[in-house]
Length: 311
Figure 1 (cartoon, rainbow, N blue to C red):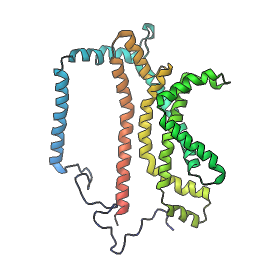
Figure 2 (cartoon, rainbow, N blue to C red; figure 1 turned 90 degrees about the vertical axis):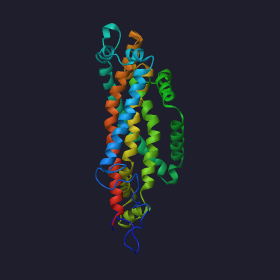
Figure 3 (cartoon, rainbow, N blue to C red; figure 1 turned 30 degrees about the vertical axis):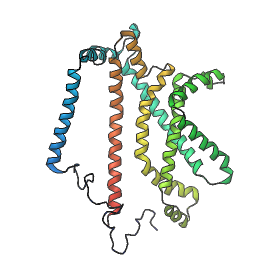
Figure 4 (spheres, one colour; figure 1 turned 180 degrees about the vertical axis):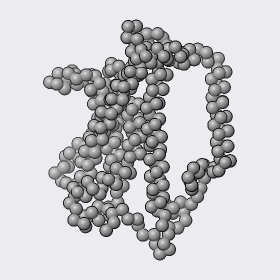
């Protein structure tokens, strides 16, 4: 019995035009490799011209603004941008370029912990065993709480509250550890819901087919349900992790010298905000490739679904 078989197409042997599996061609439907919204060479010309017009208008607004020169000096000074990037601890400010590595390390550690912790929460909330009812209630309360409280408040609560408790080991950690803990607690609530959506997207017939083959519940979950669920949730997971990469900058409120905090210290020392521009560029360098990779996965998944719906 095939676990990934397509549903029958009906007596005609093909889905009707305009059905959900095979939508009719429209202005936002790509029907070939490299097809654009308007299609062909004319679409390329129109999109290029419109892009140039928009960019030209933005540049003109900036250049003609009365305070353009002051803005350029405060935010786009090449000298200050370079000084902020390399840093100078002797003069009281840190390197934004070096501090971004802390953001990257926090992101990697938090991402791994979130993937594990959120999956456990999702599996608990999906369980139907009566003995797990109290844990399901706790899981639901956890998700509701951390999805409702702003991340910045969670960071303050963990970073300022845990040290006051004077607990052995726990209360003597660094601000970076407390910041990563807050990120994990908050983002796990969101990612667990992404996991749950993926688990619920697996058709019940797939589970029934696994059981009919004699697979125990645990093996059915491991070899049938989870692989299909993960395939469906990769794009939204990557979108969450794009946000996570940016939100590592919030850990700086605890005093951790990450990229945004280093930029803030520089601006306070020299009264110039070009350091924030450097930090923004570095975050863009990190997030844009991941965003494009997410778009590519979404497009590949769209093509796979369309191919599966076509006889």
